[in-house]
Amino acid sequence: MSTLKRGFTLIELLVVIAIIAILAAILFPVFAQAREKARATGCVSGMKQLGTASMMYAQDYDEVLMPHGIVCPTTVLSPDCRRGYITWLVLAQPYIKNWQLFRCASDTINAFNVWPNGIPINQMLWGSYGYNWNYLCSAGLDFNTCAGWQPLGGGLPVGMAAINQPAQTVAFADVKTAGTASGYYASYTAESPAGPGASDACTWSNGGWGVGSFADAAGLWPKNPTYTGDFAPRHTEGGNVSWADGHAKFMKPGALAAGTNWRAGITNTAVVITDRSQYVWDLQ
Image (cartoon, rainbow, N blue to C red; front, side, top):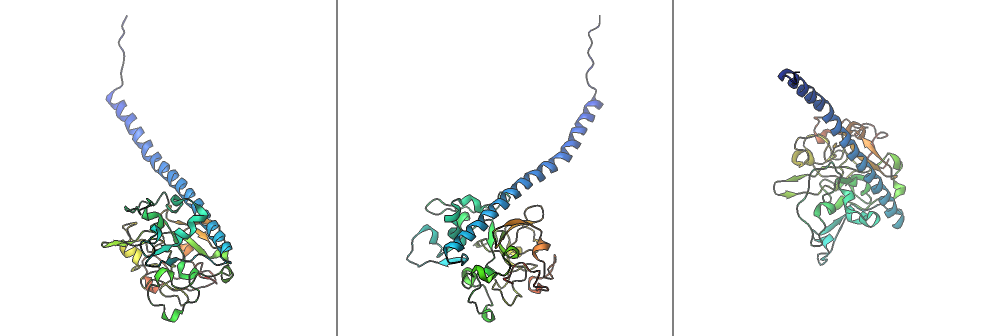
């Protein structure tokens, strides 16, 4: 009785391999999207905690929001002040007690140095989220003379009462880490789209959104410009935002630039506010 066993032919093996390759090509992007969705969910949760921390800070300081940063005396040797100032990230830390919260899992840029106390610089200065300092740190500013970058956010932080619609006013947003060949620049600011052209906001002279903005011109993330200034659309062509009332949600760039003439490819100095009732960055 014959015991001959029949094996797979070469054609059959090639067909199976082709089917596996097709399935992999279909499923791998799905897995990547699911992974990014999970990261985005974790990021929006972190944003929510930032909003809560901001509200707690305001309650402790007579309804006044956190400043963008505080200049330290030159004699201070605290690790927090070794660059001469501390940022809002340090001020928010007592209400969060978790430095990792400031780092989004989808943010691939990392700083390499650490302070003497072992806390990485990217957790004090190079976080993944920026503060709407253009407006939330605009109290007491003379906007007629606000031509260039005002150190640490220009004026004094505003009080909660100054924000007419907290649920529709940006407080924190996903941001890029921008820098130059000579060194890194901190990523703790969230520039408003119409910053350079707005009469009631302080901003970098080349801040805002559009071609020519600092973050697009020298951004370390990503290498290609996004025309959104330092706002980072890292989560499926959008980013997470925490609002002045403490809630957080995902936003597309177009929705964040509502009330302006912003569009991909426009020069940053040409972006202007066209409908203040839709603009989500100012105090109106």
